[in-house]
Length: 229
Image 1 (spheres, one colour):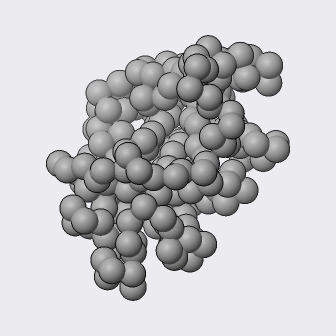
Image 2: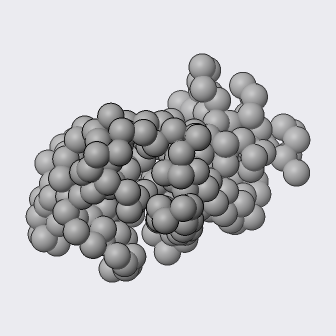
């Protein structure tokens, strides 16, 4: 397993073909893959007439990563963070890019129609690798834990919006990968769930804190008027 940066790309080598679950643009649902990748984009890359799916598939194929679970972000790819956790022999490795420019609180929406995005603040994309062999049902549960950990980290980062404390952004994506196995459980009472939750929480919280330090007055939401600390 390794994480490497190549220009606008970040490559998370999973070390072996694993079963993965995500809502990735290119490989959504259940797939078998050896990698998760991130591609940094700017507004100039995604023109209104562009078929983003076809463009991204071509970009991935050119890199030899056509089978990867792939994310897109306008967050500076060099700001990627990672965290690991080990619980009762179960190992979890989380890699994330974290931007909060289009933060949302679940159950409501902020009007971002007037935002000049300028392509530099990003969203949240998380890749998680687990060492434990899981059934597909357990992989779904592990995804729920990863999303819960993402949400907890964003809430603890204290991102305040007109609608309340942010729980994520409007374009987040999460991918979870593990060997296909017999373990049917990955909830909060299990070693798998604890390791997964800790790794994702630690990575996203670190990335969120770094984003807030970089953009203390990011446009679109009057942060100083909303009680950012």
